Length: 198
Image 1: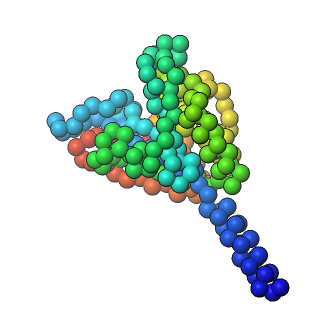
Image 2: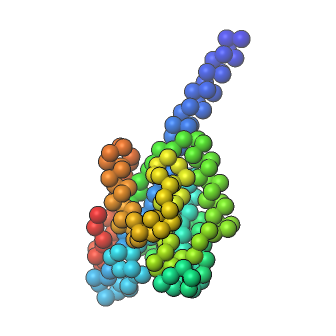
Image 3: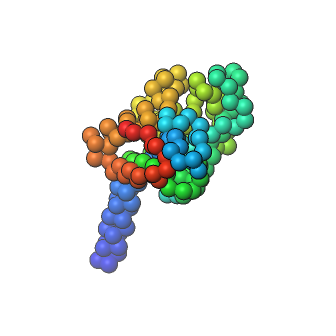
């Protein structure tokens, strides 16, 4: 009986520990423009880049065009949420060293399950068009985060306006990380490009 009690305490402590170590990690590729002649232009230049959310270990979900991209939603095709590995996500613009930001956000076990489930649903049934003046990667990442207690739910129009390009979301994340003691890691990119700043 004593051994059984010790075993139950061990598994209870393990479960609590596992719950305490769950994270949603936002991954960001900074926008940039070429300095060297060997470098090409990226969509959006320094204001561009890309944002994805690691909803479970090694599973990064990010929002991309699904066809025609117009200025407005009515002229655009439905976008698509895609799943990549962390390494695959950072290869969006090529696998040579890019400037990166990773912010680890602690979440509960319940939030973890909801987030992974919502992400799977969005991958199979994308909820909106990808448009220049519409939902793009930064706003779509915020949308996923709003299914946790990380940030409040807001209208799609507000998401588009507040997180029109990645720097807007990066600044919000870095401010939150400083205040809430989230781990934020910045990796410098190659010197042949001029990278965006925070």
